[in-house]
Structure formats: C-alpha cells, structure tokens
Length: 175
Length: 140
Image (cartoon, rainbow over all chains, first blue to last red; front, side, top):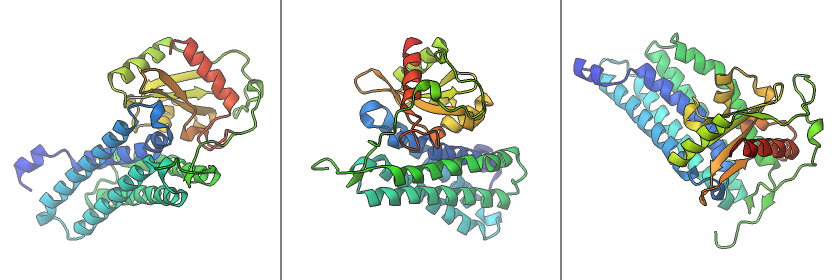
C-alpha cells in the first residue's frame, strides 16, 4: 500500500469496529424492524435499506483495504476476505427475506431466520480473524465487541423462540 | 402459509406485573419526560426511518426515549447499555411515524423476551397499555 492510500483509508480497526456495530444493530433493531408492520412505520423499509447499505459500504472498504495491502500481506488474508463477503452477504440476504416474512411461507421465514443467525456469526468470526491478522485484538473496540456478544446472540435466540411460538396464518390471497 | 403476530396471552392486571429486582409494585403512572417525547417526534418527522426507541425501567418506573440514530449499535440493547441499566430490569417498545402521519406505539423489542407477553418480543399487554397511555399523556 502506498503512503497516499494509507492516508486516504480509514484505519482498518475503525472499519472492523463499524462493521461489528452495524451487524449487532441488525441483530437487535434490524430484526425488530422486520417484525413491525409497514403500515405502522413509514420509514421501515428505508431503515432496513439504509442499514444494509452501510454494511455493504463497510465491507467494501475492508475488502479494498485487504486488496491494497495484499502485496505486503500474508496469503491467508485472501480466504478471510472471501469469508467476510460470504458471511455478510448471507446476513443481508436473510434480513431482506425476513423483512417480507408476512408474505413468505413459514418454512422460508424459519430458514431466513436461521440464515440471519449464521450470517451474523460468520461475519463476527471474520471480524475477529481479520483483527487478529492485523494485530488489533488488544484494541479497546475489540474487547467491547467481545463483551457484548452474548447479549446480541441471546437476542437472535429470541427470534428463533418467536418463530416457534408464532401462530401459522394463511397468507393474504394473491401475495 | 405465513407467520402472523396474532397470538394473545392471558391478560395480567398491571398491579401484578413482575418485578425482577424485587422493588415494590408501582402504583403510579410511569414517568415520561416530555422533552424526550418531543425529541423522538422531531427526529421521526425529519426522517421517518429515525424511529423512537423506548425503554421502561421497572425498578424506577421510568420511561426513557431516544431516536434510533442516537443509539450505538442501533437498538434497545445499546440504549440500555448507554443508560447504564440492566436488560433484565427493562422492557422495550418502539414509537414509529405511520404513513398517515400519526405516531404509533409498538409493543416490540428483544428486551421483552421472557416477560410473559404474547410473544417473545412483547411485554404483557396491560403493562404496555399503561406505558402507551403515559407516553401519549407526555405529548406524543
């Protein structure tokens, strides 16, 4: 990476911390937003689109950072890059499906919820592995993210509980 | 077949709501700061995606409100942490601007899990009804 590129890039630690914040926000309020009826919240779709956009943008910046530093980096960064993209894609696709759970078959909703949980775990794993690869595990943001993980993991477990307890109702005709 | 949110729990009287910290059962309406209500309304009107996050702290009988954009990461869990409260002592709800321009209070939050509501995202309806009345009375 050139000196100019280094100066124009946000530090990788900040990018990883931003991504952790975004996906924890999805595990909490992203899921809540999906469960609110759009007829009761005019900005619901906009909120979900905005959050997905932020995740895409941040992942893109992390990928660019990895690519730009690839020459000087150990080769194991490239698989981490792929895992990050795959995990975050899985999370965002699942969130988009869950947004429309009212018109989805019950099984598809369950599958989306499982996928959201798996994508969230995979993205966090990538964040931790990238933080380790760049020697950032001792930074305060990293400990903060680790400390709060159980709370967000429990929140996602709440989604699974909700799916088990929610009643099955016919989809409105024509949807 | 899709999933619906129509499950209904047995209603509980408000004066019997559970107190995880063992405090006396509140007999007065929950405390709501009108300035916080106005801040949520202003933020939502400026940007309908910037909805209101509500947290009810059971031991103090106090409602805390904030626009979602001011929580970090976004959501109830972060707001509870920002307030220095314990999640088990709190219940959550959302204040959203509906397409018709009116504000709607929604009984939904990951904080409500295990609180005895109709679903794991809902608090018991009588408790929610009391909070909703208090928020409306504070200027919603």
